[in-house]
Image (cartoon, rainbow, N blue to C red; front, side, top):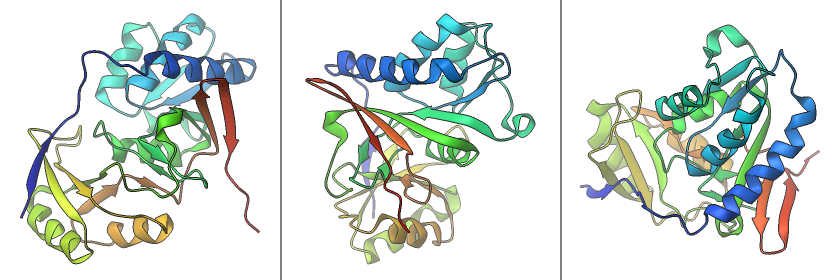
Amino acid sequence: MFKSTSTQASASDPNLKSKQQAAEAVFAYLEPWIDRHTVLGIGTGSTTNCFIELLSNLKGKFQGAVASSQATEAQLKAKGIETLDLNTTGTLPFYIDGADEFDPHLNLIKGGGGALTREKIVAACSDQFLCIVDQSKRVDVLGTFPLPIEVIPMARSYVGRQIVQLNGDPALREGFLSDNGNPIIDIHHLSISTPLDWEQRLNNIPGVVSVGLFAHRGADKIFMSTASGVEVLERPQFT
């Protein structure tokens, strides 16, 4: 049924400079909005870590942050930034995170680091989702990056069979459990031309906890680093 994939890690990141450039642009955008009452939602991954480095310059000038993963919580605490429970904060003004892919409508694939469920929760609780990427993440149609889904352990095989019926190629992420204690299945070879439909269809499979498609709650703004600087893209408004 399943192929196996391992989590992707690289000792050196050739796109680090681009990520830092985009993180600096988001930080410059946010800084005027931050005061001592501000609580920010912070995502997970190497791009977000670049933003956390900058955010540490403001520690003590804002209330704190809600982390989307245990790794992010540790990173924030290491920088002296207080972490807060989402149940006590109410709606957040901003959520800052990266993405594995985005399309022209600012729909996203996320979850390469395995934190998709908590990322989706914090994004849903935020007024604005600001996404930090480099130009390599831009695609016309989502699906080149394998789509992660988090599943209940007992449903793993069933979910895999349902994915095959949808012409997807499921691969169990080997040796990995989410912070919620669940396995991740990465779906290869999907062409996600209708992200809203795919998100709903996959979410409706019994045993699926969360899907790494952020279409119902996509990014509001994307800060994309390019060779000529950072381009800010805004989510189209449909009437």
